Image (tube, rainbow, N blue to C red; front, side, top):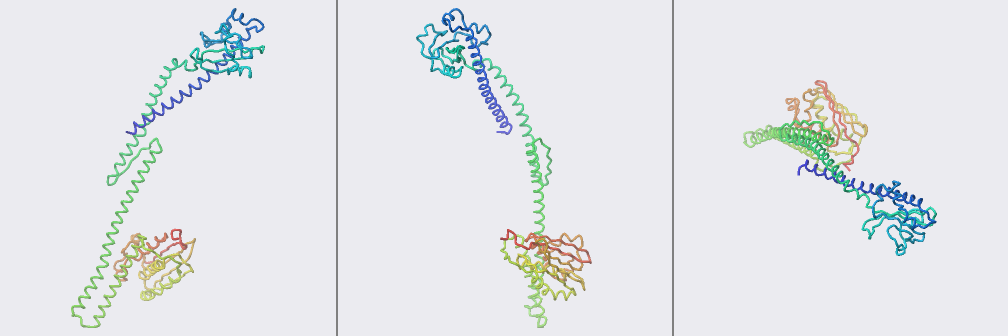
Length: 483
């Protein structure tokens, strides 16, 4: 079933239910109003009859001389409700015995009426009304009773009363006309409402079909319903997210390709050197022991380079996936920095670079190996890419619950075009100089991954021939995720 048909069906169903409920409520309220008004008219008629009767005289004779109900009708009290042969006037004693009845000549045969509801109420309250079905007349009768003015009698007036049902024949055409007009108007409104909903949905569906295109461009109107605008807005956001995700996948694909290409190249070079030296040693052509020792030294160096490269690649992989189990404990940064300075002291002397440190007694909840790699890579780069007589300043402080690690050098600097790529794997600003100073080309990439692993931040400032400054912020205390 289409949405339009469903809206029609439910709209009509709701209208029919509403009309049915209104009809029932109208029937009950109108019936009660008619009943109350009829009771008031009957009681007023009883007052008029009571005023015309002489209770000291012969009541039967008075009934024979005049028709009290006709007098009441002449006074305009019936209003069309007291006419007909079924109307009945009865006068009873306070003991419930019938004295006079317009429908019975011999009242001696009539039962005592003291048990009748309207009679009891009249004796207790002055007036009383009740309605019940008459087996004799085969219809419902409305009874009204009131105490006489002298207090010695009860006057009762009864009329056939069917309530509002008497007017059904008159009201039915008007009711059917009202229902028909209402349904017609409802169908027109339902049609407009269905179109106002289904048309925008069709337009949105048509726009969403564009998602199969390579570069879908969505255009949505401003609809009259906020929910439809939300769908349109969500679709646009989803489209942007898909485009962004696709671009991210393409970028990651390119990065992986470059990574495998660079890794293969970096591994191929030492393997080729090792193979060449090994073949020369195995050929027996090299007899000089000094040359043999130099070849073995070169093989060992190339092997170490390969080992370092593989270890760096594995570390980046573990940091990216976060799958490897990391041992976290309290790490004293002063000891890490002191050990790193000692390790790279020969390199600093070789490059004629002075290393100066300023470290506060800070303890960080982290992996000892991560903090060691972080400082070692930054310090080694600052020394390698420095100038003769240059300086390296390393400062570790605390601020707002974070450790601040600042490494500043007076080296060659990084050109503006390369600053966004220095954290990429195997990216080298000056390939000639990088080859000369050595390294795997993964140092800053490892730094970035370690900082991301601890949800930290890294800032870089650099000017060519002036120097480079790295500022890293890492939380000192363990996070809830580390507990």
